[in-house]
Length: 292
Image 1 (cartoon, rainbow, N blue to C red):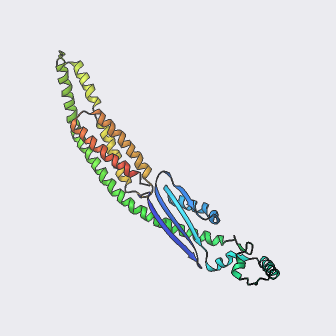
Image 2 (tube, rainbow, N blue to C red):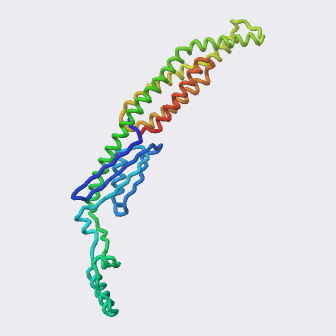
């Protein structure tokens, strides 16, 4: 089990050309949501980046940033000089200086500032950049998942403790369930007597009605289901991979069962346990928002 939250950063380099990838991940209720930020000239790499992320991360909101720096050889090729344009500009400037009696002191730096003399080349080492990007991405994902696993272990420990607390509450409720039904039956008979209804305690009709009311307060079924759900929940905490959706589903089912159980019994001690259980379950479901 691992968290959806984490951070990973890595750089891959060859001959001075490097690509750096950063991934920041937070929780999300959906499948992996990927937002990529990269220079326009690296746009062709984005499909490969998304494919790799989707293969290794199932859930979470991911912000991915790619940046690159060309090595010396490629930086030298990044700018080209149009010597024809430079020669034409230089001739025009010298003619202008001679015509007006000015010194033709023209420096190379000034000439380079003239539009058209220098041109930015758009060709890049695409294959090299893609190879470096995927290498850096793989390392960044490794670092991200290492952090997510570490946080997942912390979450699992916390959830195990809370699951054990809920199991203890269910065990306490189960111990009192039979006594609660007997007390419920006695209270019904006592109320009937207070109403002044003259019925013998061995009256068959009274016995049937009391049995019916007592049966409606039976919480055995809810206890059995709660125990089953909690056992499954505890088992999932030890599994690898994305178990967040399964845990969330079990959390919903546990909530329904404890709600039904609380509505069916009027026993004060059981009601107190139900309240404790619901408080713990609320904390569990809040933590589940972070589980992949």
